Length: 144
Image (cartoon, rainbow, N blue to C red; front, side, top):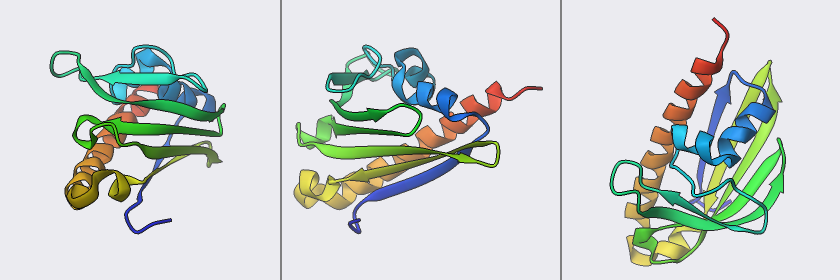
């Protein structure tokens, strides 16, 4: 793993199949990340939209691998990268009655060039915010 790879882990009080649905289904992606044009499917391109603006394309890529309830890998870019692709890897593991969800986002330095540190900082803060929303969504799923 490179020193410029972003890694995050969150523990969610939800089973892996439920967490998986929040990573791959368009309606559930919209609740914590960005609205998707359609559910993510292996081998297919995806587009995520800016829900706070004019619903324009905000990030996009191609799903490279889907192992349901275990791992998801896709290429990923945002407008400031001008189409240069990075790689996002998700892994889901059982953890004490819930799910340990881990993210690895790599290739940012190569994609961003001289703007690498600014892009790393922006993506790192963005993933923190998205993980915070995912925690809130998962908390709402917990039985009262």
